[in-house]
Image (tube, rainbow, N blue to C red; front, side, top):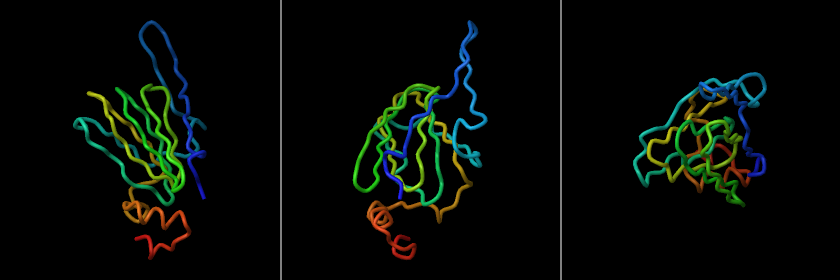
Length: 142
């Protein structure tokens, strides 16, 4: 079973020169091949995103612009990570609850996901997430 210590910040290589910075994700920077890419933007002040966990999928969150907080829960511990550098992303492994909040004006969150969208991979209710972390079956969780 995964826990918060399995979540990690990963620095994305940055190439700097007088024309600006360039960051590249390739090779083994993240531990999966991205099969889906999406991004969050124009999030209204005070709104939250996320509020779910994945059974199998992993995600890598990158703050392309602005900042936001990621609240992580593993059923026992809570950790809040502020993302605000476009060359540092957050790897969220499977089995971790996440909520995104405190979006600054103009913030953009890019998400690289290890798999395509599958509703069956989502745990959308926190009480079901707790069951999952305590060894519940899919029929109990869904």
